[in-house]
Image 1 (cartoon, rainbow, N blue to C red):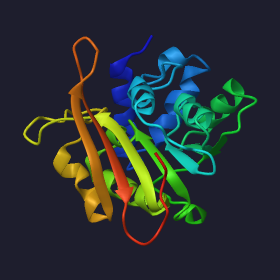
Image 2 (image 1 turned 30 degrees about the vertical axis):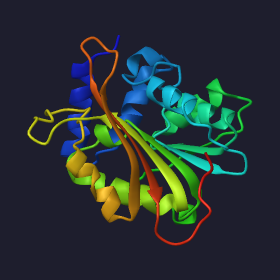
Image 3 (image 1 turned 180 degrees about the horizontal axis):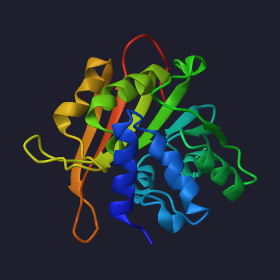
Image 4 (image 1 turned 135 degrees about the vertical axis):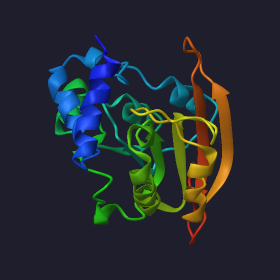
Length: 229
């Protein structure tokens, strides 16, 4: 039921109106509760997050985590399961309501928010932030604004994990989402005060394989105890 052409046309319509995030709500509402119409929704934890968590002994207890563009909530629930106090936000009210319906006994706080309109109360609030597949769904011209918002939300000493499609700087990004990111583009996060701790560049198990980046950063400006591993 997943129709890439339909999704591409929908995204293009909103981007042409200078509303690069508006198409998410349209997509979720049109799905009418059927996750098969959401291209990135598999009703399981993102396998690239799951394998990363398996290799890291994160101590989430007493730590706050934020999931950017939480979608249907599986990644937020996974972070909650390892002890974090989790906030998951999405620009789509339908997606947030869907999360609350799926996980009725959850401790995750699901809220509607737009990273292009930062929440002042979230400044320096989160010890761990997950950004998975959201940057790649937005045009390049808006990405630095989103990156700035994410860094602003991170506590001094806090950790950011980014999972995205990757490409070389000479490779064509294409005309519709998802738009793969380059290493050069992600360097902007270091200009904002993050330290790159690890950078994984690999092909996934899709057929055909998709190039992925999985990058861990720490916020080094200021003082802070930071997240424990």
